[in-house]
Image (cartoon, rainbow, N blue to C red; front, top):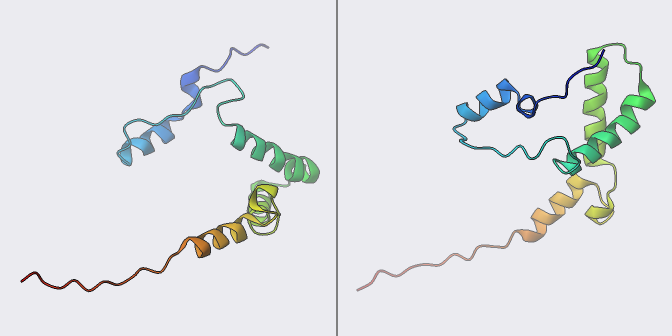
Length: 115
């Protein structure tokens, strides 16, 4: 049985569109469809997740085991896995260092009233 190609409008779910309306977001870019440029970073992350978790640990016993594996992997990915783009640090540590370094003390100024 052959399936027809998915129509571009089917890439954007009704739930997603409804949520945009509720949030009063008039226009949202969902990128192009059907090519490798629509969200390359997300696609690379999904591929890595599938390689490291889904294919290595399947078949799954149920939804709960998959949800737990996702949470566990995301926590590990953000808190333990070193990334070369983050100076060989975990993303959370890199972000904390960034915000620590970027905070500058604010000088208090006393304004004298004009006479």
